[in-house]
Length: 171
Image (cartoon, rainbow, N blue to C red; front, side):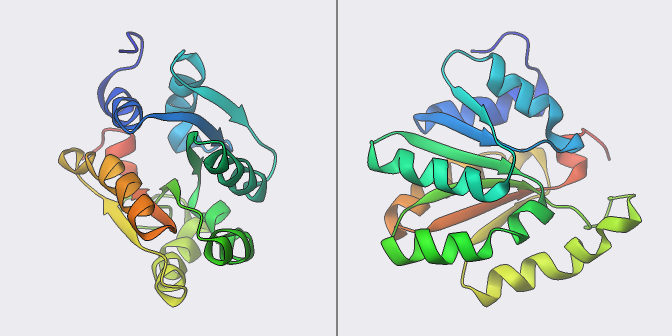
């Protein structure tokens, strides 16, 4: 277990390890900065910072073909930029993928400029039949491994969207 990670971060890292995830591709997001750092420090994972969300999709999708479990980690707005990549690559070729994203724009987000994410993310995911689950309490962290397993069953991507309150330990 990663000794320096604590609380929710450590629990998410352990859920990923339990799934045999070995590769984590991420883009910076203030809510998940500690989580990204935890994956980067943990020797069980190869962490690859990417410069575009689509690069995380391509990298993680390619890892599937080598038998490597992978997870893409990004903000909600980043996920919304990936719709073409997900439908073209993952839907067409039936490639499972776990995406862990911040649920920006939801209740508790204090940033006005993320309101559109809160308004459009879930309807967008519904419109392309992209399964998702919302982790809005620490007790729901187990959804990470359940979503990973589900993506393998359906051979498609699955999203785990985590709220600010959970990621930052707020009430």
